Image 1 (tube, rainbow over the protein chains, first blue to last red):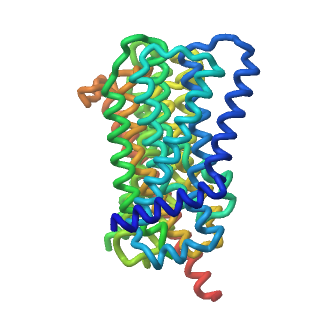
Image 2: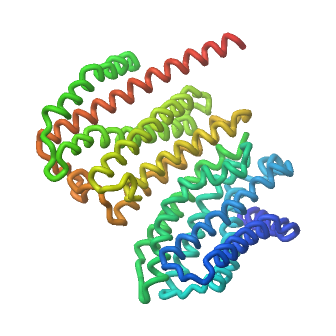
Image 3: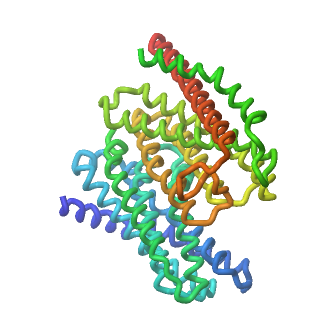
Length: 219
Length: 226
């Protein structure tokens, strides 16, 4: 099982490296949006709350443009039936989940420096800021993976994915925006309770996703 | 037998709903500080309660469809859909009544108070469910996929209805929503509120039963045509 999962992750990253569809579209979106906001702001300083909101809107829509691709690609290329026959659902879901978490982590590592540079952001509590950003990323990507599997079976995927994802992602966005805002504005800020919430949310959602994946995956 | 009994229980709404209306306007006193606008309590709170109840019923029916009956009990999927449709209606009404009360009490129709946010998010879940259902119209796996989505969304509901609103300060009053989990109301108001909640719950059950019977007839007709 572990070998199957690793093989799937390697395959997915190899395919992604060859055509770089999800990564390049997502990063381009985040990059152009950050530039547009920086240009429109014209150097006017934003409050920590405004920065937190803008950063997480960019992160959320970056996830919308990139995280569904892992399942949509399988349906479009006709390889999903092969995967259904070849590998157990648990292995497929684990591989796709880890792929999405890793991909989003990489995207955040690229987006964050761009945002900090162009928006001239001064972070007061760097450790908690990074904690909110990366834990928020893990929560988002873990909750969106099964929704990517659901949306790959439907029509109008581009519009549908944000519609079905937003209600599920809102608890995460609610907490991370507040936490990011406080970590930007206050030196020495610490609130481990929010981190515990994000971990609990990710854990619960991932567990439920495992239970439900088979119903979504098989015809 | 069980269905027949429930049908008669739901019809109690013809007695309890008028009683709830009379009690709300004539029996319960106006609340201190809020005045006559506090009578919105007997509409807004039951509507919000039924919104969450309908969603939970949809989620439980979807769970039963997925995990029991080998995926053949499609009447559960239809019942879940009917419950979601009624729930969406009640959510819209709860949002509307809440925003009127918000204007009267807090001076603005919308404040992004955590409780207001949670009802809007519930509405978004319902809208997402119906959008997904429409997008899967040609797909034979539609019952399983929409049921899976509803169960998944149901798991997130406790987070944004019960957990997150308690992490942030709320404008919503303490007499109803408080850490003691007690209703701190005068006895006349408490009795009126409980009656209203019972009336709206019966109304929901009545509408759901009606909708399920209509769906069953439509499915029967479809079967005859085929």
